[in-house]
Image (tube, rainbow, N blue to C red; front, top):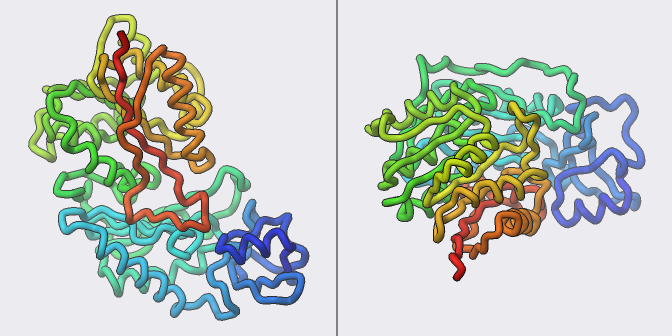
Length: 394
């Protein structure tokens, strides 16, 4: 296949994708999963990748004309494993082994949850990698079970046919929740739960930074999910943690995570409520918190209609600051790859202006080192994280 000059420039800089509009010509009868050689208009070889019929035309897996085979996969898996062995501490048993484009295996992620693995693919065109990857993972890590999950992009056809449904593809399932640890703190996860496994391991470094700063604070955890930030706060001396999430089911799991760490859920508060309504009620009743944690999902539905985190973030920041005590801390996060770090900080600034508050940045974070970001792949730095202090005026 031949790509245009624009694509050639990006490929030579290390970018791993070719978009459909950049393809000048492709082999006849090419099908998703085929591995065409990528050439410039001059005939120069730019690498080899897997063809797709979605919003990405080709995901490049190598920069030369060699094959996409077991040897290539072994090289990439072993390099990724060596990095994780260097950056994951012995008391952490939940971590990411393969981080897609950032580990030179575009569209492929592998997460470790104790003795179980989850292999996630972005497209059906990558399915041909499942067999050899499973064999490699079983040889390297000897898992009790391997689960397959899909992470289809909303820009692709929602009706794309999957070669295999999500679920167990090797080994056997766990008898119940799997107990894993992050720096010694227990979390109960469900590796076969698809998007609802129950722990976001990319937040590990940010939780570690906050660890010395919970003591003596009343904490509000918004969009709390299964409550791992709430657990860490309670373990490290928070006087009370109020966890808010629309789902009663995930809050039940949050309570179970507290119990798993020897904590009494009765000492903390769990509110199954739309965050926007909860913040408005707290503002009206004069509730104040020493630390507010704001980490919304990219998109969600609630009683007051849909919420898109990128668009609604300034409004959420303003509402959070209205229940933040003077000199309190706002901890903000946004997991939306299309939003740049600069735009994220602008959204926080805009929210502070709406609330009439003045903030100063204390700390800026990103994803944990087992979720590395390749410098030639801007989308790799998807997680934005910051800690701001309210500056009392007067």
